[in-house]
Image (cartoon, rainbow, N blue to C red; front, top):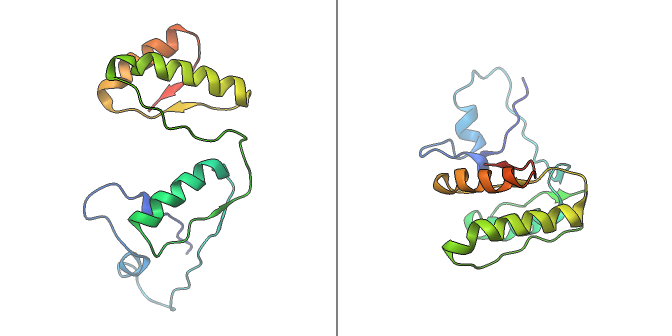
Length: 131
């Protein structure tokens, strides 16, 4: 049996914290063999660079995977007032689309902002997923 996963993506309280904890629930016929995947084919290096800084604080013993591709656009952290937020996100989505061209754009937002953001982005014909 092969089990693949990222324990760092567990989002509920009390989630399994180690592979030893996960394997304790399985029958033992042979000793388990684990492998750490160190190459990331999906997430661009620009995003993984930010994730690595977060990981260094939240799980200092962990090594982030190395990305094999770059998107060519660095993440930006922008401050704005709550009243400016929806318009700012729409402008930033336009900037990303111009810089990247083809590809998928997703906006991650707290639940109360999803409706206003979907409306603003949808009305403008941007076809962006708001998660």
